[in-house]
Image (tube, rainbow over all chains, first blue to last red):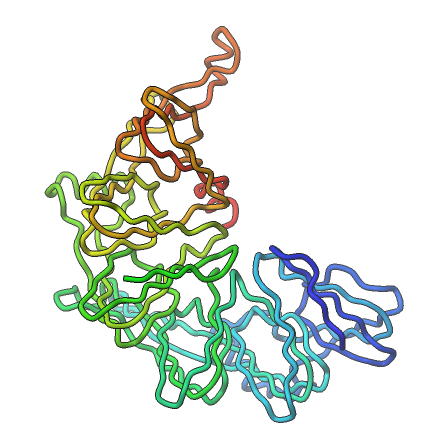
Length: 216
Length: 218
């Protein structure tokens, strides 16, 4: 696919599809498309995601849109927008190359890209006798093929060395290479009431690429 | 401390901290940081119990401030489109920043609050708090939308919307007033509340009202 970014503050993605070329896109983010473009549905099962895994993800509170993707088949143009301010990135994945993208930021991807939803981080907050589970969901995408995603706010990119680490807020982590380890940590202070204003953070350890974004 | 502004329309302020160097900020602003940066919490107890209750329960200001200590780096954002400004305060220099606009301040900066009373009319603004910061030290703040700056001469005045006020020098006096829309009772009934700012000093406005942004955008 050939994907271009249109606009600056709230960008849209214009995808030009060759005859027979197929892309998958998140549900309900299409702005417009040519009449010649065919639209169908691709379920998670068709993408190789087992029902048990999917049910497990949804039990944790994953977004409903991930039950299926909309499939667009060329020839023609399709435009997508996530309706929020941010930056769009078009990334070409080599065969076997994998990235983990925060859920809710994927715009579209080539049919050849393997998609797998996953939990990137999980932590528990104790509130009285109740336990609240919190998750950072991610879309694991493996090449070959092109993926398009959007950040909220600006994207800041880093490449971590084998011993390097970076700490991010849970909301700020946008993309990480699978070679990076992601660990939940807590910002705590001596003398604080236990379970009070503890703040979860993600410690990402290299080696690998990482992107954070400045908006929510 | 070195400050670098990264990003364009949702910028972050990246602080490079020397060993032992310390900054403070509100909770929840950190985007990313060096894991070696030490983190702590400082209770904002200035003014005693009465002032604490007034600030936190009435004004909605935080009771805890987060503290980050070097060596290392830490980046902070208000997560909304805008501009970030870095201001070096001389010893004794005082500025007031709209609440929830301060990104960070160096440990040497004195942090208090400043209350601007409302007009007292029923159904109108009861007043609002600003962050009062006094040098010496460095502060970094975020303006929602674009920042417009004015240098007011002594006695020079400007009427501004409450949501537009971002920063003023301590020497700039601000008071709330009702602006009637035409004459008579109808004009007064339809009046809106604004702020009268009078120099001398620096006045900075922001082009997006953050309260409208929060309620509208969630």
